[in-house]
Image 1: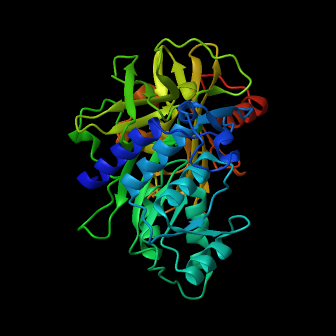
Image 2: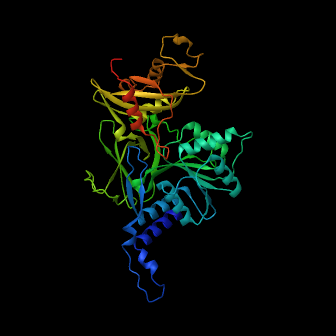
Image 3: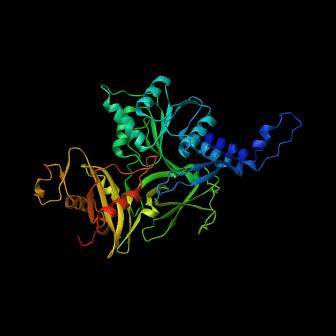
Length: 430
């Protein structure tokens, strides 16, 4: 909960920035008392061009204003509670929006900065120990690397100086959260949902708080809310001065996630702005729902929605079910063209080391004693988890390579789809 004092400070600073008389030209002039500075246009003008990670192909340059950076910094200070006592480790590049926005928040808070040439788990751990780091940001791949490095050491160490960890770029699994709390036992672990076009974070939520008798806040019981798609991921509530709403598009009360406010980009660099059906609102391209507590639940990317037999299926929902199986270490669900269904649901899975794949006929009564998986076993698992019949994958494939990702660790689902289509011809009757 954001304190009243912090919210009051946030509002005052926000109002001050809106009326600030600052520009680049003013900084070039002498600072004599006779100089009359009048640069009220500065906050709304471009400050940086930050490129997206390009999950669908070519990265695009998002033009971010001075005001957007200030508002985002204030939101992080108000939510994560950065202050002048913090020693902040830069774990992500400054040319990514998460890196630059968090760096600016720490500059505004007056904390210290520890900069490393690039992220390596060994170097990051050594820097935390040497400089008594109190805070850093992460993405799931960075957290996984830190945990893996800790496990490789002869003796696992607890890094008790770390008090604040903010995760972005994708949700942390329950296993990653649990393992992270063992390495960073005193750290409050938060997660943010956002995008480059919105100058980083739109919503925040606490995953773990060591000061409370806690349990992983990520594990919401969807049955206790008004959700129609329980396979989604809860991403919390909007940050201060950031509006978020869902434009409902189907009978499930799910729809496109929209946002507006001073945090939204001015435009894409070197592109003609496209007309919006909701003027003033930025379409995030994500699908979601809000529950009766005001939390936003992320269902998946609109472009990843699978149209099969006239029904809408969201990849993330199916992945969330299959990921619960103890034999699966990775899962990607895509839709591939099908002449009868329009698109067919296909799941690509990676097995854990102690499991084997067999689509041949074998005695299913032995499945509790033999670590063996097949398409039929996984379909049965989906049924046991009450996944609607038309959402159950028609085809389940064993994926032996690493799933393709962007430089920030985000999945390139389009490349997975292309690989499947290029390698195999499917029929929904199989």
